[in-house]
Image (cartoon, rainbow over all chains, first blue to last red; front, side):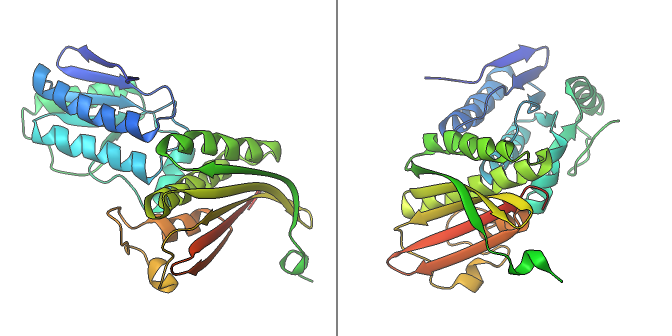
Length: 132
Length: 144
């Protein structure tokens, strides 16, 4: 079965979504990622969605789920590379992805995760973060 | 004079596609994108249109196990746009005003399907007969 690859890099997991996901693939990714967080005791998950031209409510929900589930397993999730048109559309649709950390690109996302780890478990509870 | 309000909407190109399973959503979205690109719709409007179409097709899959979609390039006076129609033979919607309220949903989604979609497009029309089916039509103008 087709799957989205998950790369381990130090204490973080990296996922780059390169194709438009159909539902089954997105659900598999959600499950694989959460299992992988537990197995590797990762502290952070970085999801690059720069290649996604569309994020609808289904995909938005998957991203939110991944963030909430990972948080329960002591890992933070940062979504990086969202296209401006996607951001505009998500807010108008009424799905601002509250509770999901975001960063402009992979590098800044990594920086955000590292800074959250340095706080050693005293991260802020909620809200979006972007370093620019 | 307000020409665009009164002018007739004329369909130019037309394509149909049946959507019955999750895997049909991505090819359907690509088809909508192709039509939007053909009339040189801007990226933000394209994204809004495709997202709106995606929401509607998901609703159709969830509540009616799929149905027929019609994608058209339409013109009204000097404007051109993309019209997408979703026809299903599902249970129908008994109370449309209620379904159009933010936060209302009978399914297990977040309930931003219909009102959220309406905000993304220029024209939104819904007709439904309980027990017979629902037809939803959306239009996004190229520079709307």
